[in-house]
Length: 215
Ligand code: GRF
Image (tube, rainbow, N blue to C red; front, side, top):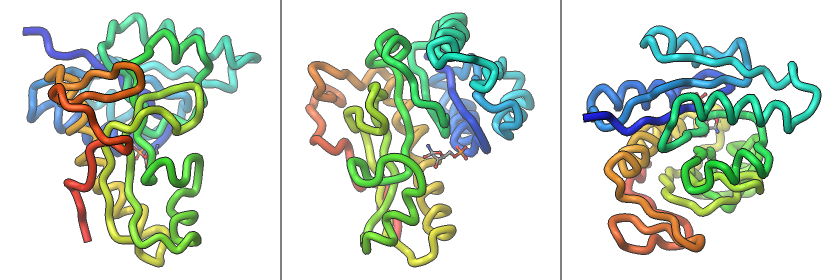
């Protein structure tokens, strides 16, 4: 049987990509058809090549207009017919055409408990704000940065050291992302009128939560 096809978009290290590569082998539920990087130096590209996964580098600096970059990205994704596109450390904001084209099929992992701390430097921001808990979120991609409907979150206690906190959150990311991709592969997720249903049950506004709590 054909496995559920996904495409992963990256810009850097690719540790979340690695978590998906490893989980795809164990779960046998989905197949990473291609990895697309906006950065030619991304370590994630070597992780993909090592597994004989098709790679593309679409360097945003080679495009005069953002719409041209988006069009090249759209074409590369379409070549692989994915049912799900996973943004895993992809550092470019996407325009309305590409987001609209893959509506309900594109998810992003973000290192904060959204809607708190969209954007960059989330760990430092959580510490500075005196948060006692921090974590990661997986949400559908919309044209507004880090603001789409939230599928799932995982939380952990905040530590005063940002590097340590980042490490703790990444450990959660590596568990949460494969889990959510399995939901899609099992066709457990439905997004309708802004409400996410998991196994037919409407999720609360901040997604399926807290099951990976880690002290
Ligand atoms: C992760 O923390 C993810 O939440 C954010 O970018 C980081 C990517 O890390 N969007 P990696 O490249 O998967 O190691």
